[in-house]
Image 1 (cartoon, rainbow, N blue to C red):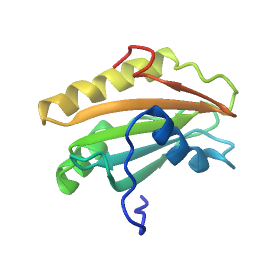
Image 2: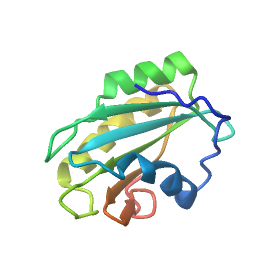
Image 3: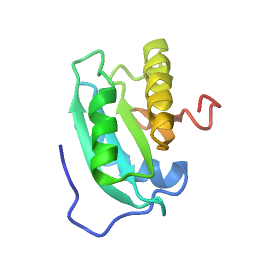
Length: 131
């Protein structure tokens, strides 16, 4: 896990989130997942990362929900990469994101977006109507 030391950044919208997460994947050759925990003003209060392998990364629902409770998060934004170069979410990405959204809703936590990065491309679950 990683916490940023600088002042909290507001992640208001897809472009702000894309700019925030893009450096996380700049040198990545395997899939990884980053989770930004936000306060009620969409400021990042905690940033966590989870490593995957060359082809996939799990969405650890219990760990994410645990962090949300610990940091009293109002919302979360997920971002992960596809080193294969395809920014479209896979079927497993959609299923896992939906499971997390349901768990989050149970504790009044909003899953604001899930971004998928592939090179310079980025897709947003929110813009695709998947959230």
